[in-house]
Every structure is written in C-alpha cells, then in structure tokens.
Length: 240
Figure 1 (cartoon, rainbow, N blue to C red):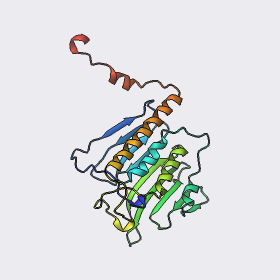
Figure 2: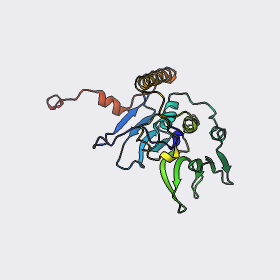
Figure 3: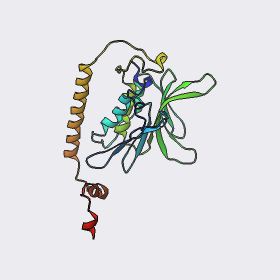
Figure 4: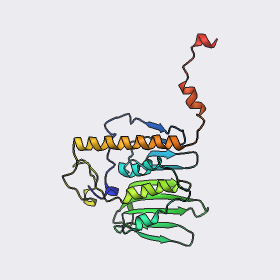
C-alpha cells in the first residue's frame, strides 16, 4: 500500500478493552517513550521526550513514520542539524516562508503538510505535521497529527521527514485501510515468513545501534527512582 502517509497506523489495540500503557526508557535514561492508547485514535497516543524536548503523535500515525523518528534516537546528533525542507522539496512538496520566519511545506495533493511556526504572541517555534482531508465545506478532517517542540533535535525531525516521504509501500490488511481512495493497494509483497524475517532483522539492527550508542555515550548517573525500584522491598519487621 502506498503512499504510507495516508495509510492506517499498522497496529491494533481495540482488541484489549483495558488499553494497556507502555513506558520505555533508554539505557542512559535520557529518553522516554510512552504509548498510552485511548478510545480516541486521534488523540496523542505516542509521547517521546527527553529533558530538553518532547514530541507527541496521534494514534492513527503510521507505524513506519513513527519508526523514522524513533530510529534516529539511536544515531548521534550532528553539531549542525540537517535541513528538513530539501527532503520534502525533492519529492515535489511546495515550500513557503513568511516575514515572521514561519515555514511550511505542502504535498501537491493538499492533504499532507509539515510546518515550523510560532505563536502570534511569542517567538517560540514548534513543528507540526498533519494529514487532513477537505470536508467540502471549507474545513478539514484530520487523519493524524504530530507535534514536536522547537528544541527537538534536527536529526530526529530529519528521520521523521524522510519516513514521511518514503515511497516504499507498506503492508496492511486488505480491510484495514479506512481511506482506500487515498492509497494504491496491490495484493502482493512480503508475507508470512518474509515479514517475520524482516521484523527480526529490524530488531537486530536496532539492538546493534543501541549498543553502539551506549558505548559512545558519556556515563550518566542512574535516576534515584530507578535505583529505588531495583532495591528489594523491606518488610515491616525489618523496618522496626
């Protein structure tokens, strides 16, 4: 199925009525990832953050685009971050910048946008990406939305933008595409063992990148909360 930006998220949580939450922390405790599904799939299910920045993505955001962002967490940040806009312009997105420094790129179909903008009463910039369908009444109906605060490292935004415009098709169930008129579906591609092998290869690559990042990162003090969580509980008799 392509384009991926208009596809469904690629995972299901509706089968579990309790909507389990997932919290992940990097080995150096610099980054956290929280998956908190809610009945509203347009809400910010995914929250990724560090002490300096945070990002949030809606529940309908395609998994491959989220992975473009999270994979970049395992890569070292360059001293000068890459420019995002050439990645989008190279595949036909329009680009504009106004006198206040707000920037926007839009896909030719008018459905997808990515922008860097500031509020009217401050000079604080943030990044957003959105896929939204026109309603025919002058408005738009959002499919998914992502937010990144202005301090988000550029190499992470670059990873997100690259995944956003990646032309490679993605695998989805035949009846798992609610907006079929936006995408091209072909009944072919990797199945069964091939998908399992690709998933295993991705896990190994991620583990290898994580080990490399740990070896090159400076030592970081373990948070007090984590240290306390690792200590065995003290019984009431011992505490007296």
